[in-house]
Length: 122
Image 1 (cartoon, rainbow, N blue to C red):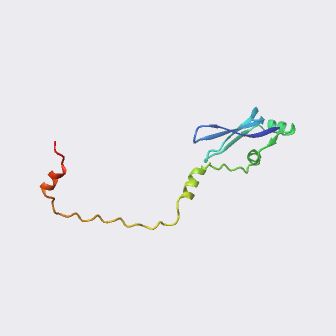
Image 2: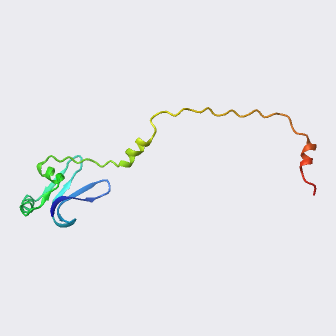
Image 3: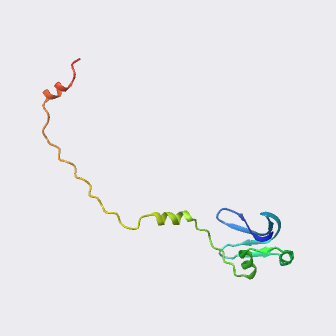
């Protein structure tokens, strides 16, 4: 089945798309390009080639259909990982546990005789 869809290319944080005719994920022909930059998005597409492929039975994806109509709005991808970490964090405060106070150390020193008795004779 022939499908007219957007194929991503470009830099990591600066996407660009090509409007392509594909059959089973193999590109048959490029019809144009789309640059979704926030200041001035540009759509360059050959209307004649688009009509030719539509007449031959190619179906448009919803994104390409909205692009052609002029209603498409590019939305930046937000990873799910960041959202799931926020949800996983506990929202209720945990009860605080007071740290134990150190026990008082007696100031008495042990007698030297008791220290000698613990050492083995050599």
